[in-house]
Amino acid sequence: MPELPEVETVRLGLRRLVVGEKVASVENDTEKSFPNERNAVDEFLLNATVIDVRRRAKVLLIDLSTNYTLMVHLKMTGQLVYVSEDVRFGAGHPNDSLVNQLPDRSTRVTITFTSGGKLYFNDQRKFGWMKLLPTQLVPEDPFMLKVGPEPLENSFTPELFIERLKRRKNTSIKAAILDQTVLAGIGNIYADEGLWGAMIHPSTPVKDVAVNDLKKLHTELVDVLKLSIEKGGSTDRNYVDAEGRRGSYIDFARVFRREGLACPRCSSPIEKIRVAGRGTHVCSQCQKRTQ
DNA sequence: CACTTGACCTGTCCGC
DNA sequence: TGCGGACAGGTCAAGT
Image 1 (tube, rainbow, N blue to C red):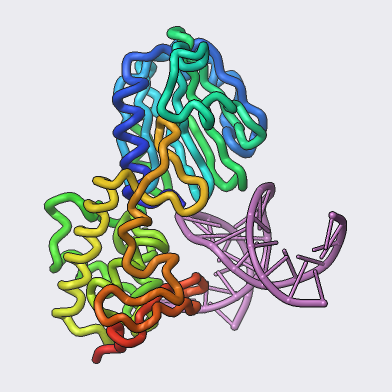
Image 2 (cartoon, chains in turn red, orange, green; image 1 turned 45 degrees about the horizontal axis):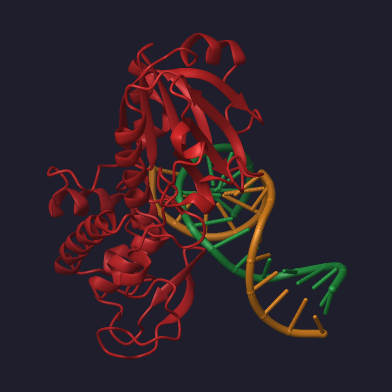
């Protein structure tokens, strides 16, 4: 489930691997993965050089020399894996077993560069997408218009966080922080981890969470996102970075996927419940509803 | 407008 | 061993 740390890890890898590369060919297996017309692809992606790789929320923005941007959303099972020509011809790679199997049946789009390197867009569940848009129109994309602040920017203060939460005061705090219009980039893993850190029960209505606890939650969310980026993100099921490597945050998780195990703070067993329609990991001993 | 639920998909796991 | 159903969870559309 690529969330902010996973998408950021992919971005850092792609930035190192594909900036300066020129697109030689594009294979697209389904219109659903990459709905742009073939002539748009031919005109603005083919022969284009990658200039930069940016990120906004969970969306990757691959800027091209044609003044178009390839937007990519990995949703739940998307991967963007780059394999150089050297690796494809057996020069060795830290993840030989994985990258040498590409393309596989989850591969939806393959972009081949003039260097011989290939960028594979794999997506088992087909929820992800790629689309080409003029770079200057990216901010006008409907999602970009409504998405909330970037949690890792300095402008994301506790005060701004609390202000943004005012639009969702009757819902659960977990549903509120998963809402991408409140803030960008939080998904199920970091919602559970942040709420545990702030000792807030996920089902607490936003209006019942004390201001000091919201400030604590702000700190915990920012810290857990930064820590996860350091660890290369979380590989829960099939997330991998731009070189096919797994992330290790899950080894440091305090509650996520730890149901039945001891809470690191109070040793009570972690429970798995359902909040906001999602599987939710909680220590009911130290995450009490506040008021 | 605030809020909740179902749909989109496919692979995996669990119980029978 | 096979099979049906529940489950995984990012986002949007449609519902109340």
